[in-house]
Image 1 (cartoon, rainbow over the protein chains, first blue to last red):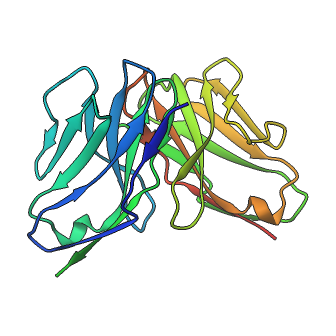
Image 2 (cartoon, each protein chain N blue to C red):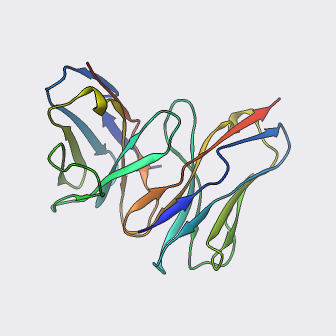
Length: 111
Length: 115
């Protein structure tokens, strides 16, 4: 079975600063994708960024980037120039045949 | 982006009754749909995976007779909570994707309250 672990239940960052959210996973599959999703208070899940496991290059999407370490099964999310609208729950997700989520990190952005 | 519509957004039902939640992909064909349950301030717990035209695959610990999932077409999946009890009260979310290992698009969620 696949497991996804987020070791930081809560994180905070000053507006305009940078924050990194951690995620590790465990799988025996070789072909999979990893994602970071954001869930604001509305509870609508929003895709932040995706990473294909076969790609060595780290994905980047504007202020969001990942550090994908396949051998270590680590997939962290870096948010640069944090904005108030970034405050939300962030979930790391793994998909092979199923689609599993980590335990989540609640991000607070301090003005 | 792709749109997934989940209905109803809120429902209150009496204990012992059944309630059906619909999940529709509006502008794409969903070969796979997922159903999750989310408790307050917790993660999304995968309940089952359904592929169009075949029986749903339930996660360990999820009662298949209580949570009936039907994926009758490439755009519609339903979750029926049968003989609901107060402990079934929760936030239920569906998601859908077009192929294996692609991103999933999420519905707005359904808040179920059983009284």
